[in-house]
Length: 258
Image (tube, rainbow, N blue to C red; front, top):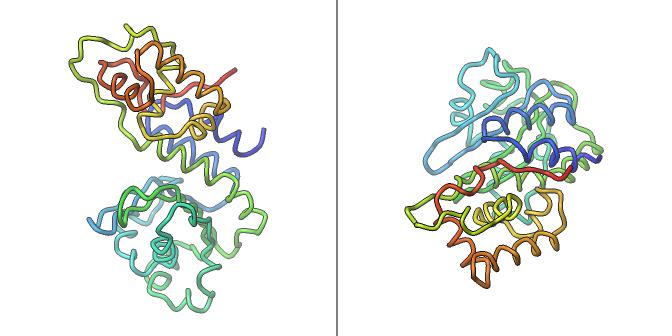
């Protein structure tokens, strides 16, 4: 199986975002051997950060605080903020943005990365959750840059990481007191699973990538769902489905075909 298939097969069946981040970090560390890596959420407007780091037992204190402290000095952050549209997001190496001389003279290196023994990084942006809010995976090395071949691999897997980020970042559909539970609609597990993903804003192609099925198969499942929900389009189907109490699988609780 290729790298994209491996990511989909290993990461779409997990029960919650924390489990996903742990599993994804383990897989990425195998694809890109490195001294450490992290998933980052950085909110430039609210001045807030969240970091999930591997390994977790690092001696450098609160990495979220450090990310906030150096947010305006980090070339990868300022470069990512310049990419305002998902279509121009691209994996990038630190060395593609600044020269070694510029980096070694920077405050980021002198007061942060030199102690942490980081002078090579690869960043894969996975979401822009709002204005100035970035999600990204960042791999770290010392004195050994990421190769052009690794950059090709990064470009191949980035779309799947974006889909996974979207799926695990969204809350599950909110149940209400509607008297018709989704079980009463007679939906199959797969139909309910697809509707849960559609409710999170994913298109048929993205749902198909995540579940390992074709977009045409996704559309067929949706058509069957419309019939059972007695509606004719996905907007009404999502409205009826999310109004029903506790039938939708939780965020990230996907299954894949055998």
